[in-house]
Image 1 (cartoon, one colour):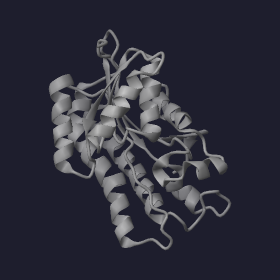
Image 2 (cartoon, rainbow, N blue to C red):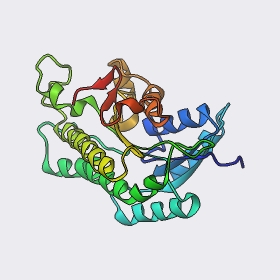
Image 3 (cartoon, rainbow, N blue to C red):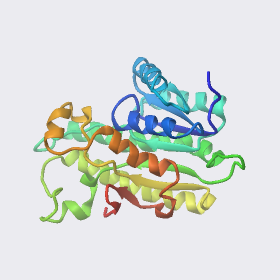
Image 4 (cartoon, rainbow, N blue to C red):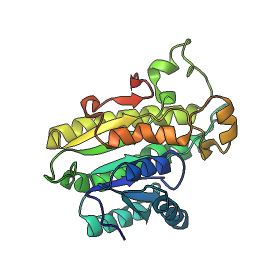
Length: 262
């Protein structure tokens, strides 16, 4: 087995889609990265790792951890495992998410989406803060900030949702849109909290991969027909944030065209 990279990255919901492609992008880019694939289904997580490590040109390393963001016991087990093996996190990517396009919205769907997309992200972040504070940018000098990334969406932008001229102005998808708007506020609150606590040692971001043809809606082909990007494109947009290429825009939502209104 290759030596483990010195930048430890946990990506939740990463056995497929944009999370998987983010992991792939990172371990293809540099031997510095060791990516932990968080997956609710441990079998799927292990399969994703095998596939990643068999990719031609891979430089970094990867492992899987069972992580259900809606299960506090699962979160705690995952963090305990990461702490015992690595002692820190250099980046957490809160990517796990579900979608509902019910119209009109239902209370059951609303609770389900918020539980995963918002409460789940909160639970994982709270459990990982002590590891992020021990982390950093890696490299020979061990300096640089750790990074906390919330994967969001322009569908959660209140600016867009209230503008009749915006492509995101629509009554459909209430549950998902509200969850991403809440996630943006979660990002802002952690940014303020960590800045007061540790200064710029942990930088916080919102990252929008854009509309991608993933299985999130269980109809990737239909999304492609609507002009959706490939998951690898979304993964690249997240990976540039993880790599520190957008540190000047910490505290903002970064989308396809740069800083996005939210």
